Image: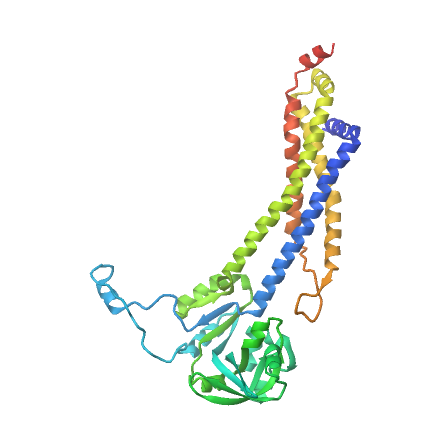
Length: 415
């Protein structure tokens, strides 16, 4: 085997320029693969982190996934003798019934935390201006467990709602639109006709202007009074220890509590599909770089085979079997792949470190952010594996051709 390795190395060194060009193709392919993969994976991880951190992992709402089965359907079963149409639900006060029992059940689950919320449409009136908002009633002592709103506070704090039950948190976009400031007093009207006065005890900024302009927060008791839904809520927010288990756990919770339970994966299914398609395009484009490099290896080894016909014939005449001839040229592909990875991995890491130093300011952002990159070991394994696969595949056909050389034909033709 040492002799085969020596012959393979001599063949590559005999054509240094072509070997170096092929080697650079593998090096650049691996480096660009890592750089682009790092950006794509990093941006995806950053997006999912923001999505997961800023939203509840599971939301239980006051709805049912399927409509209630009508008595006639229960009586007749699957028979086609009855057709039910224009079914109108009873008029009732919407909300999750017996939510205390549901919260007690959720409190017994060790892998999650939960908090009740009552949301509804309202109109804020200030200085003659009116603005429609979504008013969210919450328990101030618990909201930090299931929401990150406290992390975005610019003025005031969530804890001020504890000492001031008539307090309200609003977004900075809404504050600018209505010329509001901390400690101002505003009037809020609900669809029920109830009107209450609230004091602004906190102003937050999430960076999403539509959210900051439409979402306001008060205590749960004040929201229940304003919407005339005493002892009612319409959603329960849940945070998981492991967000990736939210899809499975939401189904288990829904089977127990019967109310519709949606995981963050289900609510963002279209975005997750878009990310999956984007990854497929990214890997296809970057893999093409390594395939182009593989053609360079194929060209070099094919040229060596053509130039070394007499050498191959002599080796076979000396007793080298076809398998050993094939191994010589496959070894050349393996050597180029290993050398390409050894130089490409450090270059790719250098590219990633360079990208990590880039800072930019997105439109509407007050502070610059760094380029999100990923150092996930899986992308390194993929780059190394694909480079080796491309190198071996590129050397296989020339190696197979070399193993089929007939020494008698070559030596007779050279006489």
